[in-house]
Image (cartoon, rainbow over all chains, first blue to last red; front, side, top):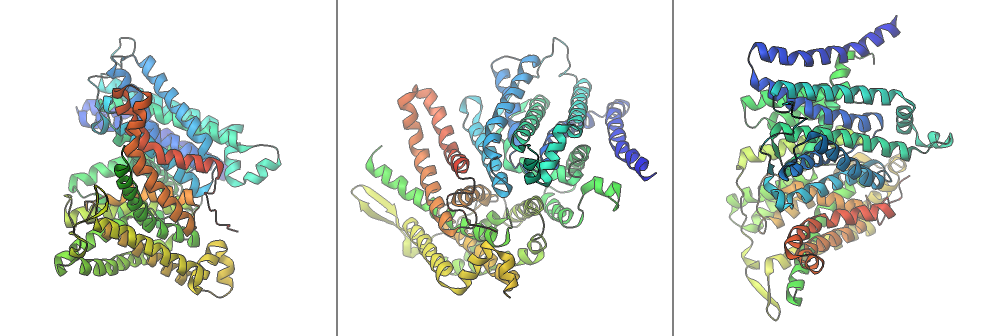
Length: 316
Length: 307
C-alpha cells in the first residue's frame, strides 16, 4: 500500500504542476492579464535553467556556482546573431546550445578534476570569466548590454512574437527538458551519477570511472541552461552581462534548494516560489531583500528538503 | 610602456595584493580550521569601511575611525557567528553557501537603507597626506605606501602568530585534524570563535584601509570576495603562506595585466580589435591563472594535509 501511495505522490506533484502551468494562458485570456502572461513566461524560462542545475546539483552533487554563465552565453549567442541580422531560430538556438556545450566541455573538464569547495570556487571563477568577457565586448554594448530590436523567427510563423504562443513554446521546452532529464536520471547514466555522489571509491572498484559521466552531465545541463538563455534573450529583447553575474548563479542554487533537491520538478516549484515571492515582496517595499535574506537563512537552517520536503511530510 | 609606469603599476598591484591578503587570511583560516565556507566574508570588508565612515563622523579623525571601526567590525562579526554561522558548521557546503549568500543579500540591502546607495568617502589621515618622490618623475601617494606597509606588517605578525605561538600551533593542528585536537581537550569551538573574530577584524581592517582610496558603496565587498576566493584556492585552502603568495601574485597579475594587455594585443592584432581583445583578456587573466594552477595542482600551490 505504502509503495503505491508513494508512487501516486511522486507522480501527482509534477502532473498537477504541469496541468496548472498549461492552464495559465486560459486564465490570462479570460481575465485579459498580459502581465501574468509575461511574468509566467519569465518564470518558466528560469525554471528551465534551475531544472538543468538540479540535474548536476541534486543528482550528481556538483555544486556549480557559475550556472548563470550558460544563461548569459545562450542569450548572447541569440543577441549577437540578431545584431548581425540573423533572426532564424533554427540557426540561433542550435548556435546557443553549441556555444554552451563547448564552454561546459572545456570548463567542466578542468573543474571536475577538483572536489568540494574547490569545485564551487572554480565554477564561480569560470562564471566570472564569462561575465567580464561580456562586459568588455564593447562592440556588443559592453556593460550596458545589447538591445534586440525584435525576436527570433521560426519559419515565418509568429511563434516568438505572440505572447501566448511564446509561453506555450517555453512550457513545451520545459516539459521536454523535464521528461528528458527524468528519463536520463532513471537510466544507467543517472544511476552512475547518483552512485558517484554516494561513493566514488565503490564505483571505481566495480570498474566505472565517474569522470566521463559527470562531464557529460555537466555538458547536458549547460546546454539546457543555454536554451533558457536563448529564450530569455527573446523574452526581454535585451541581453546583458548581468545575466551572468554570480548573484544570478546564487539565485539559481536558491531556487533549486528552495524547491527540494534532486527531484527535478522541485527546481520548477522553487523557481516559481522564488520569483513570485520576489514579485510580491517588491510590491510592498523596494528593500524586499531585507526580508528575503533572513528568510533564506531560516529556510536553510530549519526547512531542510524545501517545498517538496514539506509536501511529502516528515516521513521521507 | 616606460619603467616609471611599470613601477607605478607594480606598486598598485602590490597594494591590491595586500588588500586581498588581508581578506583572504581570515577566509582561509576559517575554512582551514572549521571547514566552513563563508561567502559573507566580503560583507565584513564592506562593513569595516562603512563603520569607519560612520565613526569618522563621530570622532572626526581617521585614527578614531580606524580603532572604533575595528572594534565594531569585530562585534558585527561575532554577532553573525553567534546568530547564524555556528549553526552551520556541521552542515554541508551547499547549506553554508546558501545561508551566507542570504547574509550577503541582507547586509548589502541594510547598508543601502542605512547609508544610502550613493558612494561615500573617508578622508585619509593627515599624517600620510601628499606624495613622495620615489624615482625621477615618479611620485607616489604616501597613504598608498602606508597601506602596503601596514599590510606587510600584518602578514609578518600573522606569520609569527601562526608559527611561533601556542594558539597558532592549535590553529595549525586544527586545520590538519580537528577531531584529534578536540579529543586532546582543546575547546575547538572557542578556538574557532577566536580565529573567526580575528579574520573578520582583518577583513574590516582591509575595508577601512581601502576606504580613503576607493569609494565606499554597497556591494563593494562582492568583487573582492571573489578575488579572495581565487587567492585562497590558488594558495591552497587553509595555508596562510599560500594566501600571502597567491594574493601578491593575483594583485600583480591583475594590475599589470590590465595596463599591458592592450599594448601586447596591439602587437598581434589591428588596433581596433586590440582595443576590444586587450581588456577582455586582462579581466580573464587571473581566472585563467587559477584554472591553470588547479589543472596541475587540484589542491592549490601549498596544500594543507587534511586527514
